[in-house]
Length: 330
View 1 (cartoon, rainbow, N blue to C red):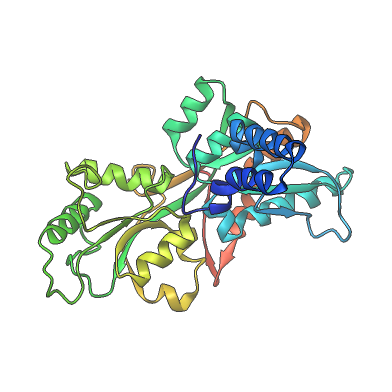
View 2 (cartoon, one colour):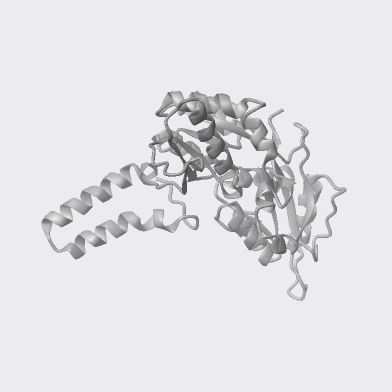
């Protein structure tokens, strides 16, 4: 079982809450009822998760069935999943389908794959080639399809205590952050600190690759006090890093989704390009689950997402504060 502490505390404590309700009920019947429910949900934890949002395509009075369930983190928080869901619903209805709805489940790459395995979601937009291919090999997913390109950013405080520069390559930047952090002094106006989401997300995996790339593992024993493990979804993690004057890895979609006044309090020191060889490129793939239901809708969505005139057009047109968040698939 994987509890997502710090992301959705209700998911962590509700089995215990059920047991407490059973005890307070004061009857054997009530006790048996609630214990059975609790045990059932504990055994199939990820199957008991509610969607973060349900989209209706903007169709008035649409109370149709949920025919597609999507797992994703950052693109859901930025609003892209809503756009894709609404546009896809309208497209299908225009073709003659009865109105239906699409559910979005808030999840990072690791959790999205867990949700696919449990049948909680039908598809996931995920960001780890290795994890995706393993999921297919293990029978959790059946196929993956290039959806869009997001871009990792290395951001940090304006004071720039590590004295890094955008002219440096990303590994040199991480090396400089490490050296500065190891030499922090109590008297420093702003100490060098790095915030990690520490949650097995694609972002956490990427920054871990960077640390390992310079021969460092700051999360291992003896733990580096300047390495801030902060388990949260993208928007919340970036806000924390900004308010705490810490360096961190985020993505462009998340950066452009936060309040502009908050974004102005941090600096982008390194940003990914669209080059496939750029270590900060963050490709998103549509991963189709083996346990997906409503296969007709799932297959239609797959074709719609990769179509240059349909899903790809919607992805490229998606903007925040007048700025394009994502590049289409190559």
